[in-house]
Length: 205
Ligand code: ATP
Ligand code: MG
Image 1 (spheres, protein in one colour):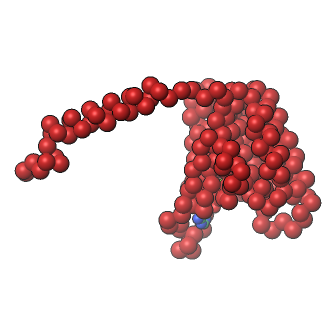
Image 2 (cartoon, rainbow, N blue to C red; image 1 turned 90 degrees about the vertical axis):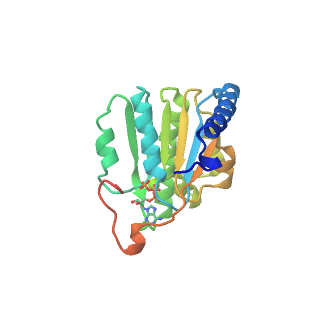
Image 3 (tube, helix red, strand yellow; image 1 turned 30 degrees about the horizontal axis):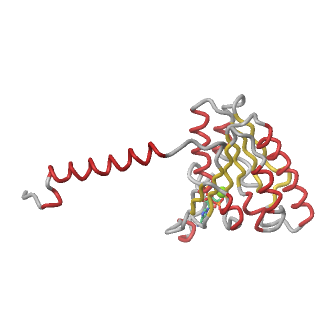
């Protein structure tokens, strides 16, 4: 095999050293945040909630305390819920009493349930006992105006210094994305549902 300029080992090393220098410089200049970060996972592709569950695993690995509030009633039994039940001392999980579903047609009931879930979330976020609080599918409640965006931003702004918050769900409000430190948009490239394949245990719930 002949070495083209691109594959020249010496040149590669010099280039990589320059990349490494630039990276180290950036890392040196970066700082720790004054308080927990606010993360938003949105978009129409799969991975918003499961990514949040991955962050929960990381936090638990460091012995941190985690709270989860689910704003939509998903499947009654999920793998994540069963798994995280193994951490009763570190993790508090709250599913909205009467989670709304696509079938719900009682708006007042949905608003009451979402408001109550937000009250639970507020206590966790402002109380100072949690390192991470996940508000799963809260963007759906905001999208349907079950919750007021100004009220949610006010809760986030009063978060305890140690507490980071992840908010998931499609169609995140622009005001929330402005406020957040991190916004990731999952974009659907391909999903088995389009080919008529139903949700799979372990992969989807
Ligand atoms: P996950 O919990 O798997 O990370 P998600 O939180 O990104 O998914 P949601 O909008 O909360 O997605 O939808 C939850 C359920 O809908 C999951 O079972 C997921 O596999 C499925 N789903 C997610 N994205 C799509 C899609 N683009 N088309 C069809 N079904 C989807
Ligand atoms: Mg989700």
